[in-house]
Length: 399
Image (cartoon, rainbow, N blue to C red; front, top):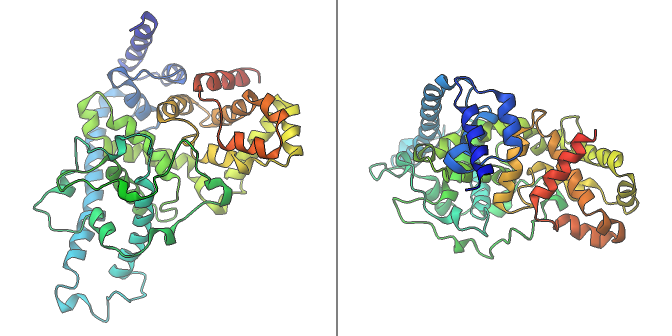
């Protein structure tokens, strides 16, 4: 380990060792990248995403309270409905004029169950293909959820719900819009989801944990529920927490990821709500901000893109909505997120990163035609995120 690296770890430990964490100092350190050593990133993200308070004395009680609350969510939204479903139809009293599978009443247990199934099937389809270039999400977790996998429990699990349903998940996709869902070549989708075999009873893969987090989030947030792309936001969070070197943090990765994801979504959820697209908090405004920033920093490149009618919707939609999680490999995404989460004007720096990505390939864009330039922007050619972040910082400092 280099002396510089040891010095950076010592700087983090000093800030995190204080009774009250100095947030400004922590942000400055995190902005330049958080070392993986000693679970530093996991802890810093939890503070930056407002899951942990700045007063260290409160951490222990808050974590216990939130983890107990998540267990309660599991019981209320997965286990109890699963028990009810397992019992439905056992006696004739369950299928009555008041409640039966064809009952259109929105308060019907059956109606709720079928609607939840539609959401679950879309989540299932998306989480199975999370980072297919990595084996991690298909591997079994060291800490399967005992509440769910207890063999004494006789209830319908999410796994069983997906296996037993005949509804095709393709029919319930909630895409945001058109070209924006073009997948990155970095994420080659397997031809068949059967490549990801479900693990035997008593084990569960990491993608199943992510599925559960998204399902609980959808149940608790019916206004937005689940929209494709949320899987790409929760994936890096869960990976970071589930690979933490501290086994106690790792054991509670599911609950901690859920609350950090919920806090992060509270800040970016407007990007996922189509009706807000054209409002000042919507994604269209942010995409236009990328172009107005580019115009300010590099008017020649801005005019070239305008001349070719290359709209920010064609590429910046995905960059901004998914926080660049589909443009780079996972370790690089995590490094970018260190800087994004450390941004005190949350995600203003993201606009500068997008602008830096454009200026770094300006020569190719100035020379290319529409087709070539679209290909460059849909499959971004630079993989060195440190170069991109350095350029974004230069743009920030030149304001």
